[in-house]
Image 1 (cartoon, rainbow, N blue to C red):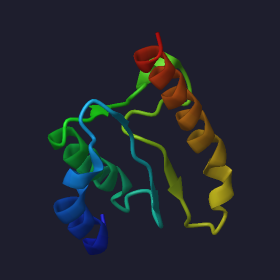
Image 2: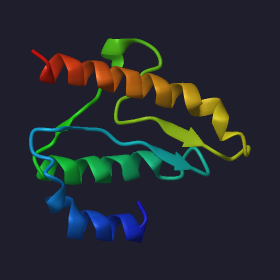
Image 3: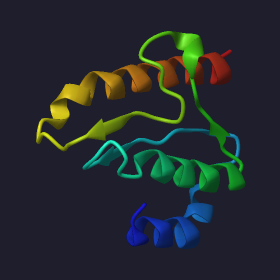
Image 4: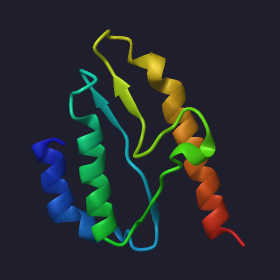
Length: 103
């Protein structure tokens, strides 16, 4: 997580009214072990502190298994190869939001 994002979360996140809302996060990284999952976790931790509901389909939605959020790895300069994971995550999260918040 960048210093700029951390400063934003610490100073502004409280103004977003996250309590009771569904939250998720994603990241990109230069390398497989570049800290993307840690960055996602850090953002989700702040959302939880603000009262947000954290989305994770985990293994219950089948493949691809996305526990914390999708990650795109750009060590080959072909980050588009990960686009489908981000689209699937967004679709699953939207379905969960409909399930939780529509009557």
